[in-house]
Length: 293
Image 1 (tube, one colour):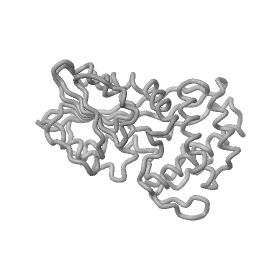
Image 2 (cartoon, one colour):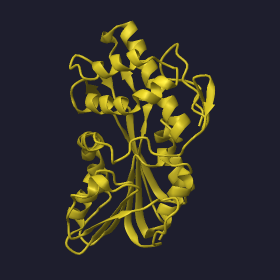
Image 3 (cartoon, rainbow, N blue to C red):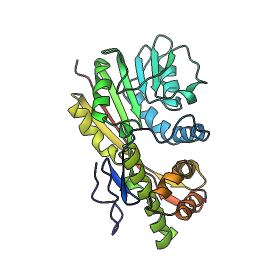
Image 4 (cartoon, one colour):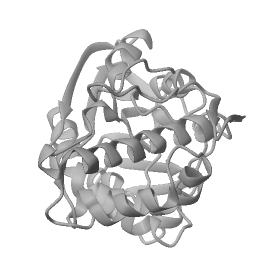
């Protein structure tokens, strides 16, 4: 999806169409997740994301009434923190199925109500009309066909069941102006290069959060609602460290794009480890809806 503005005054956003010109030539979309769970630093990255996001997720799910006896599906379960929380809520009679393309980081999960399964939401079989709750966090923006993934998740709900999706919207991401004009510009350019590389090479939509409420309504769900969460993240703290790990993993691809230099990426990685550096986080948009009874 193309974006015409960046949210930064006087600065244009990169072209975020499915095939983006990187380094002067189109780079085809691979449709793959950029942060493989088998990578050495990915467990830390998933743990930090859980530390940053779980409290808000648990609040949303608790408000929907998740309780003992529910059958729940967690799609794109990542490190498994939400799946483990759900398993504790639905015990002892309930059931949680946690799926991901790569379940490496969930190998240590052990709960009698929890099953972990390798699964592709776009292609692998999924039982229909089977779950009281289906939840996905930071998944849809990565899918080559997010509407198809959402439709399959909605079909897995029992009549009256709830679907909840959470996605980031990076429009809000901005540095504290105390950083100074030159450093703010550097941070912004590296973040825009991050967006362009992920959109161009991995079909990632960094602005998917704003679509969620409409997508759930279009999927035929009723009683829909949504909320947005953002805060100030700090260098050297979980938010800054997540960005360090993200940029370290993408450093070569971002540099090869020609949008910024390796030295500039390294400068921003260093900034994200400095406690004096603060920045507004990307917004986390949660949306929910109910399958008609």
